[in-house]
Image 1 (tube, rainbow, N blue to C red):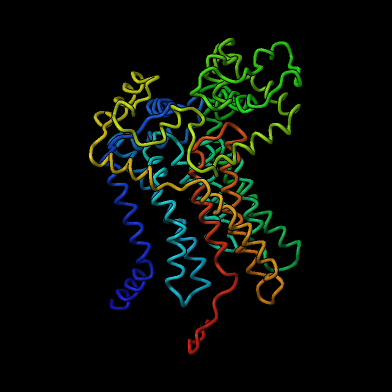
Image 2 (tube, rainbow, N blue to C red; image 1 turned 90 degrees about the vertical axis):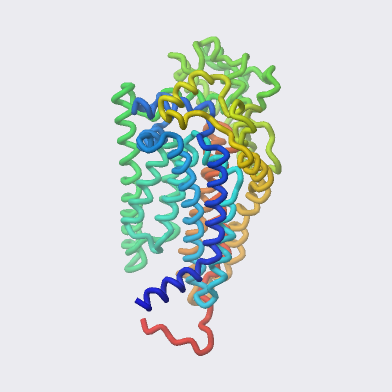
Amino acid sequence: MLRRLSACGRWAWRHALFAGVLAAAAMLRIVAAAGYPSMLWTGDSAVYVRAALTLTPAAHHPGGYPILLWLLRPLHGFTAVVAAQAVMGLLSGVMVYALVWRAAHARWPHRPWLPQALGCAASIPVLLDGDRLQLEHLLVSDELFAFLVMSAVTVLLWRSPVPRWSAGVAGLLAGCAAVTRIVGLPLILVIAAGLVMTGVNGAGAGGGAWRRRASGLTVIVAVGAFLVPVTAYMAWFHSHYGEWGFNRHGAVWLYGRTAAFADCARIRPAPDLAVLCPKRPPSDPRIASPVYAAMFSKESPFRRIGGIYGPRSNDLARRFLWAAIKTQPGDYLRVVARDTLRAFAPGRSPYPTTWTEAKYHFPKSARRALNSAAAVRQTELAAAYGGATGVTRVVQPYARWVRAYQARLSLPGPALAVLMLIPVVGVAARRRQRRRPGTEAGARGQDGEALTAWLMAWALLVIPAASADYDPRYVLPAIPLACLAAALTLVPRTPAPERPGAEANPN
């Protein structure tokens, strides 16, 4: 009994600093829930709630988030959703800390404060970021998506070499992320690359053929597990709409992506596609994004063909976007690069539109928390799902405190740029160490762990810019992975030398 108490005491002391950070993060979320007891709505929220009420796949968005809302509905309406998303945010920070501490402790076994300090530094931008706190209150799929992606990376990197069961669980979680947000589909490629970089169980023994066979089999396990939720959701979608997919109008958003550069004088579209030639700039000064201008402004070409969800819109958009990308591939890549780099800009501009960007701040009043374009429909759905908890409330003085906190304590774009540069500089600077005796085996695996997180962070920044548009909230899921990659890069390649007089490990 005394041994157990002593071990618990050592464990608590070993993580005392992080316990303080985690307590502060939990208290911050309690204050936020006191100021904003219900969820904050955006333009997509009504789609998710309606799908949760009917338990049917939404026609325009993947259904992972409505399934979560459906599972939480019997608890206490939107109160349970606020609590669940807050717990996801806390667990994301815990996972970042655990991965960093585990790697650092293996290198600094006799310096307990160094692993703890590095782990806390990596988790603070996740646990205490004001924008992430606000994201947890939004009735959108991003917090669930970010949690699933972080969980997949944690399982993947927890053990090195990666056992096959870990690869399978990581693939399954990535598949769940893909049915939550469609930008998660390409992430399985990052997981496969991570398996190759970090190594797999069985891949270190025997000859090259055996290593390739073991690595290939583990990648197959990960991909197979990824396809389970993806295929199941597509079958469910097919049972309702008679077509295989995640939504019925996915090409419309990618068409909007081409509206920033499409030049019909060069594309020479077919006569029936000429109606989609974009007109720039929009007359509404509140619209800064050419994507939103092409889809929602008064000059939108979809107004002439029945709207963005009209019967012909998706087919025409698909044909036009491929013609534009095929004719102007360089312009497409330039636009993707430009909008990806918006994530690193200082401050925040009213992009993509002034009303969209305004939704990413805690509102001053309950009236401003409503989506005015569909306030009546939103009120009806909120009451049907959450009853009394569906009433949007802003409680003072807590709401005022939370607003001030978000305005002052959110990760700026240049800081994210520094985090993304650390792995590049660190790996490049340590190339010489790989030639030293005794460092080659560990270098590949540990560099692979940092690069896996780094590639996942880049994927979460680039894929939305390539398939839809830049949006401030799309950046937030990449921050935990950027922090993780930077911290893992700072961990030395080899364990610290034994202290004089320390007993040798009998094992």
